[in-house]
Length: 133
Image (tube, rainbow, N blue to C red):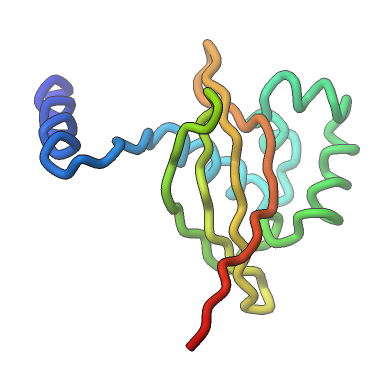
């Protein structure tokens, strides 16, 4: 079954010429956001890479950074996964998040593959594209 699924994904990528997105990356981000939604900052902190965990040093400091600096991630009303891309050897996942006020934000999640799976190695708010109607 798994071999058939892998072959189907490979065939779809070859036919479409697109880069296959790693669903493990999206699942990691989704898991962290779900933990934020229920204020489980211990679980959310576990999705961060070892380097991010070292930088913040404690769950309490991480929680303060998220709730004050990234409230759209802490309490999103909608989350959509955009493209993944490799930039300078790092894998980035773009995520469109709508906050509680209906404002959309695009965030870039820098991901790190570890022995324990994908971890979030940084998040940055990306500039919004200009939309002229």
